[in-house]
Image (cartoon, rainbow, N blue to C red; front, side, top):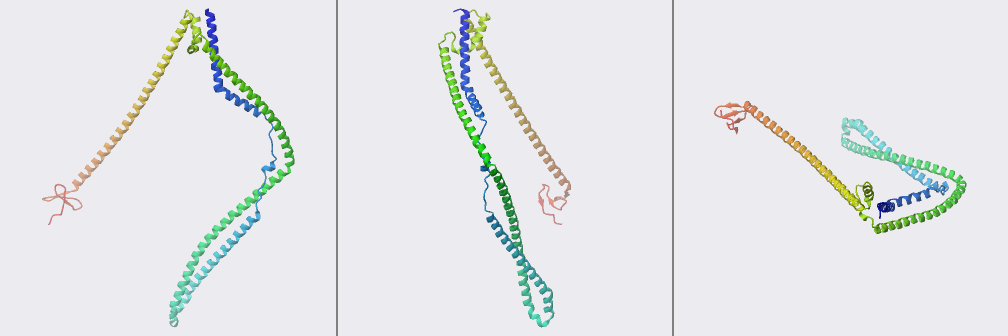
Length: 368
């Protein structure tokens, strides 16, 4: 086989290998997106959709307004009773307070001044106490009833607002319902026409989808068959080992560039250069790994040094604080020593009159 025939054969094998790689990538990465995109294009081609008369989306909720009004009337009656009870108790309490003041300021002085009625003074005082107790209880009860009345009044206002809002919403729904009802016949005819058009387009879509699925399945089968054929051709070819097919462009370049005198020599040279490239790439990866490791170690060392510096600074601050405390204690001791007065034969006497021996131990005052 001549040199040109060998190169042509190598190029053919390389083209098989590229086709195999392309077909394999298509099946693995591109077939599903292509299928999905073409299916979406078919579905998006449906221009008409079925429509439903708007009447069905505006059906009102038929509530019982009389029941809600009856509830409001019952609550309003209960609130009025609560109001009447509140004012009744309040007025009764005020009357009791007035009677008590009258007894205290009018009847009580009269009985006290009339000797013949003096025996009634105890009964009047007891009556005053009873009336005052009733008035106090009445005032407390009126406060409780007033709070309860105010609460029910607020609740009734909120309930009335909810009922009014519900009635307004119901009126708006009924208005939309009547408008939709007036357009029902027109929308029904349009919906029927749209349904017919949609049905025709959907049947067309189903036919096109079946054709597309058959086309894509055929493409898949053809690609799979071509892959199997290319794999068989690559296994059966004897020009170059399958492990070195990717080196074919470099082999041809070496051979045609007269860097090798034979195909075998060009193959060996390409393998050797590829091995060197791999070794260089491995060396660069290892160098990058070592550099990253050194950089990480440098970061760790810097972090450790910063930590040590922080700890040293903390220790220094603590030592300075301890020194300051010791100096303060020494100064206090020196000031205390200066404030003491020597007592011959006894020891010392401080500014408060306490006595100490020469060792600083407290002792009783000397006898005079």
